[in-house]
Length: 494
Image (cartoon, rainbow, N blue to C red; front, side):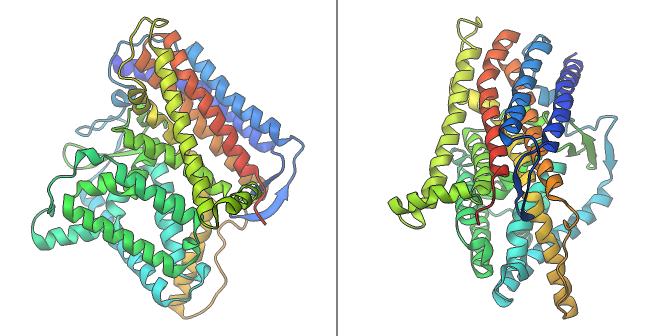
């Protein structure tokens, strides 16, 4: 009965989401003045003003939440979260799954693993000896755009491939093979660390180094950053074993979280084969996160990708000038990033506290579970679709352009020639590009609203309590929607 109830709930959630998606496309088709990040600086103008687009997109998200609260009156019986009951188990595959035999998958995975390590090492080598021009060096073409952003896009579609592709885990496996046993000099990974090392790595490596320094445009600096991070990951694994990669590697944590929204789920079956199934994007993100550190990571990811887009705007330059006068060059940009990150963390914390207060207590006839922290962990996964949607919207032109650049550089190195660059997005118009950004951003927020509604219903039980508990996150998500659309609509800094 619980599985059937979960399927009915999923269908109910799908109806408003589909209708809202159609509305999203309408808003995207009627955009005002905008620019295409990483595509071209040309602006276009449509008859609908941008404030109306922002209001319409925010209203779409809010009305979807209202629709869910009114339409979904299925009682909660306190059973397992919907994501658990609707996800295929590790030991069996549902009838709709496509099974890939292990003898077929393993050679492909081995080729991908060795090939990715070779590409990583080639990028490091070319960064040292190649031309120190960002658009012509594999270090800057591969390590930031493809390794960081490109793998993230793959994770959003098909789940994280990082266990296969991670260069440092491949090197660790080679060391284990030479040693003949797992290496963990200091013993097990300390539980008290949680994912905090990954949070620190993400904030420093992506938030600061990628967004606020010239590292992405300097092949030599990129090599130093990538090699240093690889050495740190290997040292951590040598100290604490393989679990270090899963919990302390910022890339592994990021891709695993993004993979929660993937419509494709790949799982091992009892006989060792691989079952590929389709799932709704809100299924896995409705499950609670494992720790408060992962909540901080998710919020940091949402904020950082938004800040990345914001740094390219004239509005950011306008804020940066007075901040530099007050704090000095370099410190000002980091201070602005840190201030925004704290604001995002506080907004999510406040939403969690309000949700727990409104969803429990005298009005609902129930008592709070464990306070705001437990609510934050419970709702934390529902923010992942927002991060995933903006990650795709903001970065797919960047990844595609650098993929074309990588192909051109490899071709020229192999043939000893200097041909024209490969432009994979040459036929994409500015209007279509920005429309895709609007559609992706709003669609991600709609998925987040559906997931948060599922969590509120499971957590607070009755329909009225669930609606009250859901409301603070709806407010936050509407705010995120408008902010994200405002960022992607800003002209580039000249």
